[in-house]
Image (cartoon, rainbow, N blue to C red; front, side, top):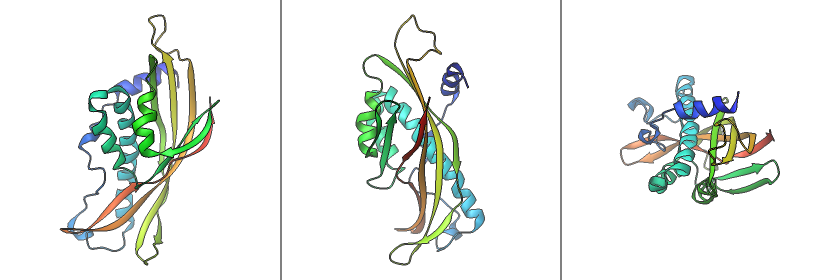
Length: 206
């Protein structure tokens, strides 16, 4: 896929992710009291997990490009993740480092567009794996599934001399994370909560 196509994809995607309830999955009433989930339920959760990853992609772009609403988007993005979740940030020359999701959203992402840079970030080939049933230290059942996706990161200096498809730097990073479905107790009864976990780097290429 050419860099020009990547930019066109980025321009043409219009996500209204701000309307998504990021941290609570609303399910039919008869699912609230269930301690375990059916295969059909888990397939529904896969779709919700996919939306969460796409929401994260969208929030990153908004945090970079919309300073006036940045804090609101940071708060929405943090709700996608488990408390104290981390992310590995990698570059072909800088290597890999691990920081908190909060630090990534508050500092790293806003800095991408400093120094007169244009930055394009796209998530490619988001794949949600199979759910596995587990128990916590209290014997309570929860579900976990692996997630993989590739992130294309490109930047260039702002200049009238540049064609839109030319970049000074590009890399493709394969990343891995997990999504956990856990039953929570709420005021109106039990509900299932889906949260993303730590994001780790599997590989990085041109």
